[in-house]
Length: 110
Length: 114
Image (cartoon, rainbow over all chains, first blue to last red; front, top):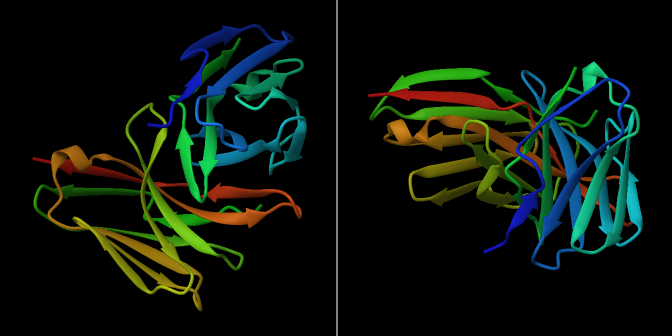
């Protein structure tokens, strides 16, 4: 079974803080993704990576950056957290065409 | 945005009834997938249909695809309370020569009451 693990289920951070969301996969998949999910907006793609040190902007990259130093780990970074980044964040990997998701991190920025 | 749309946004039915959800997308695709999300969890893959297929079945799930209308439907037959979840369609989108990602729609929330 593919396992995608996100470091935190719930996170509360203050406005202006630098926030790291970590995602680790155990199946040697090349493609990894970060989405955010908001009520009524569904899942929106923030960034993805198709190889170590390679990254691509998704539909809503503003305010975010990513890091992929090792194949199994893909980090989402909020350089200076703002209240409008309060959301559910979902990490996923891709095997052929099928996506495998982590359990999600619910981030609240106060 | 390349994001697709599901319709309806919310659906409430009784156990034993059929549930139909629709998905419209914007660009040409290689395949379309449906995913399920239980409350507050990650998404789980249900079924994939390729662009050259018109219909596919898996257990109580039936998916159709109409590429001329850029639309798909997911039918769940004989619904159970355990089918209560949100359902999303996903299409592949090329962001660059090297990068292909899955783009998800906004989802349909299905509530099945006993």
